[in-house]
Length: 253
Image (cartoon, rainbow, N blue to C red; front, side, top):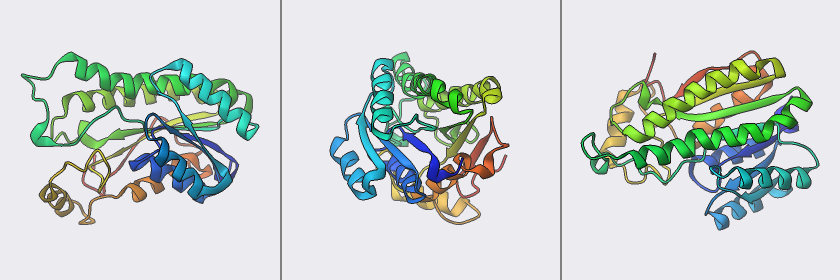
């Protein structure tokens, strides 16, 4: 299915990386569901920017009832089911290495919050999408991960553990849903320059990362979003269960 024929749900699309992903799909002619939890004004401004091919819908991905309602609203608006899901929503988190909770102080509720957002949220969006995807014999699930579980230069214990679990879910879902024509993949970025979550990162850290990459630059949200398009496009039709690292070549394994 061409990108221009797809109906794409981007969770957490009101701002940051999600906003750039939604814009990238809209640029290619896809119809886009701009999901947000609290960023209503930003989501509606994004929809205004993309024209009549997008709709802003509020839902907390950790609440299955809200996700089911979102899918029903999207179906009523577009007259068809969502074909493509980008699980981008991030439970409140700031990439500030100096302020991170260390091994002797971090508590389980911090882990639970990240698992709720990353794993439970993805499970809800995928399960809600399955009837429509199976009916069409087509589906694309794209999960957003991190290169920190391959290169834990800053041990964000809770965030990294949740994203590692999401990679595991990515691979088991790929095996389960492949016979239905549904692919499930992950893209893992490093620190992006700049999102709300990375705004607390000192400039010296960005400079250090840039100097460590073959491209001598820090990946931007717009550059990362372009890579997301690949996994939704016809060119990735034989790719599933994979994790593509998009960080300018910082992690190469």
